[in-house]
Amino acid sequence: MMLHLHTFYNEERKAEVFHTEHGFRIDQYIGSKKVGNMNITHHSEQYAEDAAENWVMEWGAFNK
Image (tube, helix red, strand yellow):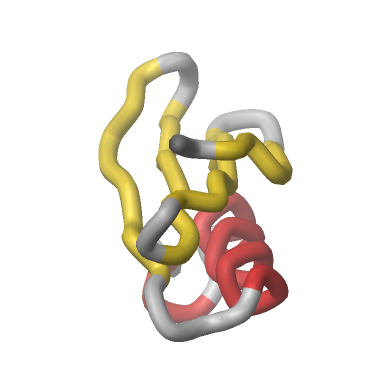
């Protein structure tokens, strides 16, 4: 079972955070096209939220 927790977005990118039985999952979108996902295990919800925000804002490892 997956529970949708949060959505982060800017003009081009979107990230949706879900709680799963194994931890958290982040679905990544550019425009309306899903381009990937990240599975976050052994970390907190805050960690998953931060990773989603980093994806949307193109910070850190997600920088162009």
